[in-house]
Image 1 (cartoon, rainbow, N blue to C red):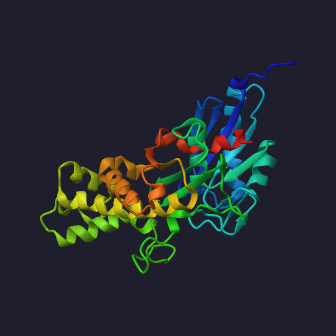
Image 2 (image 1 turned 120 degrees about the vertical axis):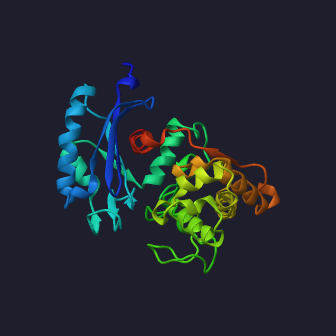
Image 3 (image 1 turned 90 degrees about the vertical axis):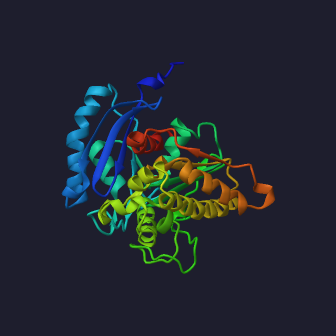
Length: 321
């Protein structure tokens, strides 16, 4: 019986964003052997985009993988795991339903699996990061928007159509803030994303002229500048994060009572605020839980490097059985 050397097996991980696409070759240990990127929005058709990917990636495969790749994993907005399609993605240049996995299989002559970016992040965390060994957890990505991946019994929840887990668009304040893209009122994303934090900060600083936040021009108000002011003990900046953490915590309580996870993993640029957001989130999560759920669920920050997490997560699709 021959022994398979897993360290020699290589997966291709691709993360498609609205502006840029990142890709890398990853081994079983979660080591990125080589990586690169190209602009997503410069290609008017998905076919031209796949051709450009091939031109950049195939020389990398030839150099770093003697036996070719085991498969391709793709994280993309509105990606359907079951059908291998990207469907009606608002921030990509290609409209409608795109049979992206088929295009990749034909070009690279390798199997291809797809899921949305937050699901990919959850898989990456389960294989390489803070969720190693966990069977039940929820991944929340806090960036420009709020994404999520729900793992139950060791499996990602995809739902009947492949689109389960849009927790960022659940309503946390009925009749609340109108979402800039969907038009819904009071969604978690409208408050807990970097975009939502900027909106909250602009509203609050207008009410308090003495706040340090008023030293910045309107277009420079973002989660990073709010964090800078919070570190300097500006009470308005601290309140922006407290309020954001409250809304996040109230939503997390609902999510806990839905799937009873062992932990909730937080990932993305917003978590750089650390305890400014984590403490109120934990407080309001526990406050809104039934007693049987209290003090059981850990809030954990991701262990994956933010720059590489999307590539690692996408590659994890290849190893998933």
